[in-house]
Amino acid sequence: MPQPSPEAGRGADIIVGRSGLASGRRQRRRRGAAAHSFSPAEVASLSRPASTRADLPPLSALERRAAGGLAAIFALRMLGLFMILPVFALYAHDLAGATPLLVGLAIGAYGLTQALLQIPFGLLSDRIGRKPVIYGGLMLFALGSVIAALADSIQWVIIGRALQGSGAVAAAIIALTADLTRESVRTRALAVIGISVALSFAAALVLAPVLGELIGVSGIFWLTGALALLGMGLLARVVPSPGRSATHRDAEPVPDQLAGVLADRTLLRLDAGIFLLHLTMVSLFVVLPLSLAEAGLAGAAHWQVYLPVVLAAIVLMVPFIIAAERAGRVRGVLVGSAAALAAALLGFAVAPANLWLLAALLTVMFTVFNLLEAVLPSLVSKAAGAGAKGTAMGVFASAQFTGAFLGGLLGGLAHERFGPEAVYLVGAGAALVWLAVAWTLRPPGQLASHLLPLGELPATALPTLRERLLAVPGVEEAVIAVDEGVAHLKVDNRRIDWARLTATAAEV
View (cartoon, helix red, strand yellow):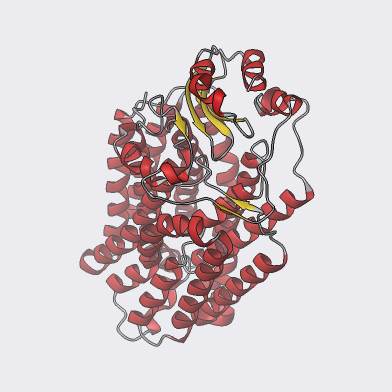
């Protein structure tokens, strides 16, 4: 089991408010916005897990607007970042000063600024508001797109890509989603955003080769700038403004919890997994378009490989997800996926330029990628202590983008020094490191994060509430967040006494 930080686990019993945290952040509340008080009937409904509730509340009209609008903004931005991956290596030779190393750096540059700024921008949104930060991030993304579109040298493309990544609005978007949704439906709203990112990656692979032929890489950058402006329009016209903004420890990083999260060995191994996965994937695109062209497929037709491969990978990953999540074979799935990833990349390095063989190897790659993109975040959620999931996911995302940056850099360096086969070997080496990490990983227990709505808490209830919650069979960790009006719990769904937990919450 992971060792959560004092603030994240059983050692942190009550968090009175953000003013008590090291960050010194103060809660912002619009005039007239009151905290919601939950009736006993609401507590009884919301304190049970979704899988046991016949009366699971639907998303309200406002929540549907918020989830749909924010998912669209997230997807438009990621689509703009992803569309360069399948085509840039084919067209970069037209830029002054282009070398394989600089081409790789241009592909991955967005990851560095994204990794450095996403948590700070999320914390900034606590101070000045979610929407101003998202507007600012989208403006930076649009500015980077324009610089890259006007670039006549590889150096200016690198600057543009770095600026695109600096518009790191992921944490602010997730926090705004949490502001605009109830605890009982928040997981579904965030899932919509996750699905939108996966769809944007698939769409980028299919659309980019055609667009590259029609409008060129410069035209794609102009298009990504337009997508950023469209996202700003959606933010203004579709996404509601929250009546109240608060810390949501299940959805956003909290500075006081960083030290504990970074000291957790299980979480660090999972962070290493996503880091190495994205290092491998981004390095692949430094040379994969060139390999497909060498196999006789024109750049504009690369979508004919990507589309069936992506669809096949989605189908193929499902039984492995079931094995990991339901059959309890997490470690075997992780080890097997790392081995398959290494084998596929070694195949790329030694295989002849045969289109069918490349498609088969790419199917393995994308199956593993989609599988780990689904399983690793789930494991992070399970491994994080009560109330620390948002911080753990923030660190996890930073590791992901750092891997993307190093994938482009190392892939470009290997290509320049040793040729395209070396790039695949770099990816294979990263996969073997992940194999070693996965082999030593002790999967987290089957504890689920659970938000227990409490509403406004009377001072007389605080001294004993945490102990009463921990006395409920199946409740393993409890953190009372007074400023949120909830209790963050880690529960064992096999043993939890939901009736007693409901009664305990109703007594508050």
